[in-house]
Amino acid sequence: MNFKKINIPLYIIAALLFGLKTYIVYRFMFNIDLENSMQELILFINPFVSAFLVFAISVWFKKRSRQMKYIRYMMLLGTLIIFANLVFHRSFTDFITIPQLFQANNMADLGSSILTLIKPYDILLFADAVLIWMLSKEKENVMAVNYPKSGKVFAAALSLALLAGNFFLAEMERPQLFTRGFDREYLVKNIGLFNYHIYDIVINTKTQSQKVFADGNELPEIEAYVKENVRSSEKSDLYGVAEDKNVIFIWAESVQSFVINNDVNGEEITPFLNSLTEDEDTYYFENFYHQTEQGKTSDSEFLVENSLYPLSRGAAFFTHGQNEYHGLSEMIKEKDYQSAVFHANNKSFWNRDQMYNSLGVDHFYGEEAYEITAENSVGWGLKDKPFFEQSIKYLQSMEEPYYAKFITLTNHFPFELDEEDKSIEPYDSNSNTLNNFFPTVRYMDESIELFFNQLKDAGIYEDSIIVIMGDHNGISANHNRSMAQYMDKDEITPYDYVQLQRVPFFIHIPGHGEGEIKSEIAGQIDVKPTLLHMLGIETTHDFYFGNDLFHDDRKGFIALRNGDFISEAYVQASGICYDRETGEPLPAENDEEQQSEEESGTPSACDSISEQVDQELTYSDDIVYGDLFRFVDFDSDNN
Ligand code: GP9
Ligand code: MN
Image 1 (cartoon, protein in one colour):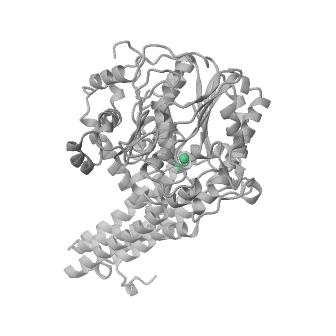
Image 2: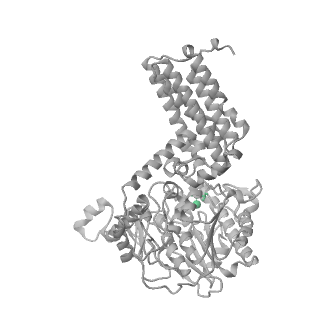
Image 3: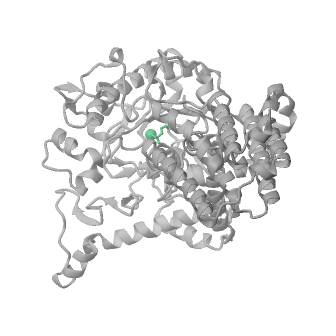
């Protein structure tokens, strides 16, 4: 090559080469799933945007030699970061996170297998770095730039504009990508590896700094609150009813209670679940609320495992996956239970791989445990029927008793379903989301029925209890108009919307014979103490914010994460206090206060509960942000 002819600035060449290399690695070495052409486009753009951002900084160096030095070292550093992630990815099918970097066992695993993880052709990754190194040394005079101030500002502005464009596309493709921060693979494919690392560092610094100021002094007050308001010293009638039985817990994706015992186009939506509501071995909780926020499915898992509230922003699974917990999976070990999660999605989604470790989950059967083909997948991946079918063999191989959690996937937005799987017709409204929801809910209903039969055939059914829970709403407020049409109402008021946050909750105990429909208010926060007590496990030293649903002595409210709540008498929705029975907004209690209360939006009938809700949410947040359980010795009698 005749270097003399080249007078394109080195930083541009470096950005192009590095961008291209990163793209090739993303596309062909990281097995990144691309679901549509928009994702293809973003994946192609972001490597160049990030590379330009890094290398354009070089124009600010006055001395040519410094400029060249910056470019060659950044090229080397960037290549090393890609290489490290590649090696890590080959072992963990995941991207490096700061906490993982400092986790001794991860790195030890990696250390012992490192030679098998490095491929000879990896050396090619360094080819452009070598070329840039040579050019930067030999062609300093022609390839360094000396821009006037305006040129420098232009380069910086251009790189920021490109970055903003990239982020805009990413946000369009995945709304709330940054606030929800749900999956490392999504972050990498949308904003690139380098921006992902910066994001990870920021999240971690935030988490760590909140932790540093906590010293456990907060615990006695929280403990006193739990003792006074939540824990009950008496045992419920169902205490120990499931002792030594397997717990099979079906996480029913996005299903809401309004479909139960209801129909669409004159057809029953969920015949099997409906039959369970009448079944003598089943308790059906008709006023059971999901309490999730941005962390969606993972928030519901967080609630059930810990009986703590999810965070108001982001997913605790993601931001606090390294905390110490005292969850269901861990507590049942005292009765020699094994725990497992079955979910045919990539294991880094919602940071499950890390979080399950912290929660003490023994086995995680993720995507790689299943045979997934184009024929047996739709929408988000493996269809629920083959998912359950393929899971049975793993379940049979587990030592009893176990707690096995099955997270379904087919009834997930945008509710896609193959024609052959459609047993009922979609609804007819302006919202395709709501329309298509019904056939996928029916598919889920059929797949759960099938699973019940498979459990019976496998001889597992008799020794188990089966829990079914909707994880969160599937139909958001964006579809309120169509929802109002379906419900034959003029509009969906804030009260209606809160009532729509009810999700089905079933506890099925084969041979029990005393099942019934339970109408008391209940929520996901209550699941942990309920199940523990059914298994005969004491909770006298545990911290939790829910009640045993088979106990009458209850707190009397279900808190939603935004501070709204449901009590036996009231529903507070969007800060407005409603009569729970009639759905009518309540006037303030006395006229004098009316003015100011109306302004603040909270009539006084709800005030005292509202205060307690805020208090409880704050205590729960203190535990999570402060990682307070690291100061608790749960085995001793002194806490
Ligand atoms: C992803 C699945 C769906 O693995 O659990 O998550 P969601 O979007 O419902 O939170
Ligand atoms: Mn979900």
